[in-house]
Length: 97
Image (cartoon, rainbow, N blue to C red; front, side, top):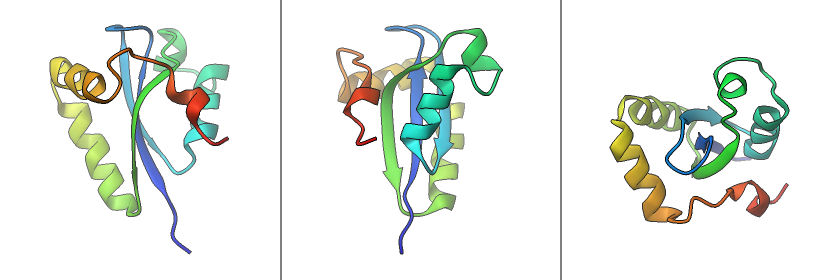
């Protein structure tokens, strides 16, 4: 059985604070961010809007991609988001939860 892994970008609002993460259960992880668990960066800055994500079959590749995106300049992250989600819609509602 193949497992799926995700990298994701959360935003506080359009062009707001950004957060990049990785998980094996995207809907659960975004729900946790929305509920304020765990406490930390996303809770402090209210970064709860899912604006971008990618899926992978290989956990090592997903982790490498997350680390790469974390090193990217902010402008590059915004370009990536706007290429796929120009309206900065909250994609959480579109997940098959």
